[in-house]
Length: 120
Image (cartoon, rainbow, N blue to C red):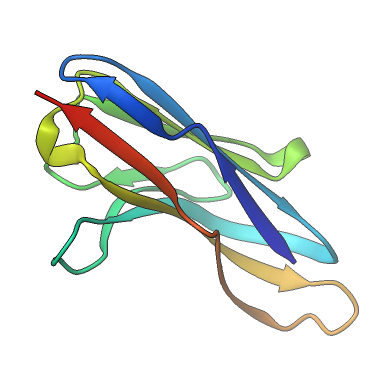
């Protein structure tokens, strides 16, 4: 199983970016998909997550600015980031809780990370 992210980059404060993360491999089912971020010198924190049924949760720092969504047919999760602030600068990691085909074992998988830099 692989999670491949795209969409990071450099943007000015107030701008927007859209991150994508596609899961591939021997996947039977995906429960929660989401995004975490880690700024230099800080712990990794949850940004937003969406369950297979569509319910979502967000960190307080991004509520009203970020929107998480998923396309179950494509095993893909998105993060639309609007009104970006310099404090949103971090490496963003995709996460998915995946049940494998054949073995039906389940665990968390992580993407390789994509850098988001917001300049003031």
